[in-house]
Image 1 (cartoon, rainbow, N blue to C red):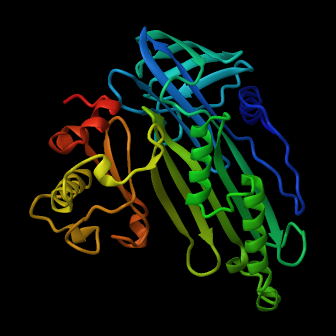
Image 2 (image 1 turned 45 degrees about the vertical axis):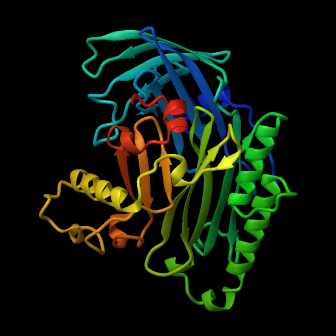
Length: 373
C-alpha cells in the first residue's frame, strides 16, 4: 500500500468506529460512517456533512446564510500523517489546482485548520466540531459486500459476481429515529423485522442463487458477460431543517451490452413523520413546472429557444416526475437512463432555483428551508 492510500485509511479509521461483521463467502463490511460538523469559516457559521459509502463519499459544506452546498474532496496528503486536506473540487487531471483548499487536522471530534482561496492569496481559520444540531438526524452507515465465484476462487477466472449493499441507520431510541428506520426499510422493500445486515444477506443470497443457475451456460464461455456486478447504496442526500432525503444509487450488470445505473430519491418530512409529495413543496401544476424544466434544460445544455429538445431527449418536452429532491438552492428532478433520453445521456438532473419557484412555494416549507421570499 502506498503512502497516500495509507494516509486515507488512517484518517478514515480516526473518523469512524469500525465494527467488523464477517459472514460466509468472504462477506464483510466496508469502512462507512456519517458525521455532521458545525462551526465557522472566517467567522461565518457553516455546517459540514460527511457520509462515506463503499462506492462513493458524499462530502460538502454550506454557509448557513447562503444555503449553497459546496462539494469537498478529501485529497491524500502524505506530507504529514493525520492531516485532512480538502479541496473544493478538482481540475481535469484530478488535482486541487485552481480550487480553494482546506489544510486541517482532526482531533477528538474537531476539525481545525485554514481555508485558502483558489489563488492562495487569502486564508481564513476553519473551526468545526462534530455534533448533531437541531433539525438534523444522526446516522451511521451499514454495508456488506461479497464476491460469488461461478466455478472457483481462482483469481484468473473472471466469471464472478460482485455484490454490495449499504444503507443508513438512524441513531437514537426516539420515535423519530424508529420512524426513519422503518421508512428506509419500506423504501427498499426490506423485511421490517430483520436488521439491515440481515436484509443485505437475504438479497445477496437471492442474487447468488440467480447467478448460479447459469453454471451450465457459462461452463465453456469465459467472456466478460459472466462478470456480473450489483451494488445498491442508500445514502443521506439531505439532512437539515427537519427533512431527510434518501438517495438510492445503484448499478447492475448481468450480461449483455452494458449495465444500468439508477438514482432514486425519497423525501421525508421527519418533523411531521411524513413521506413528502410534490405539493408539500410547491403549488405549481405540471404545466408550469414543465415550462420551467424545459427552460432550465435549455440553459444547462446551451440550447436556444428555437432548438428542439430532441437534440438530447426522446421528445421535445420535459415533464416533471416523482423522482424529486431539494436542497438550499432549489428543487431537483432526476431522470434515469432511458426515461427521457438515450443511454449515452446517462442520468439527467435538472434544478429549478427557489428564486423562480417563489410564487408557488408552500409557506411552511419555505419557512423551514429559510428561502428568502
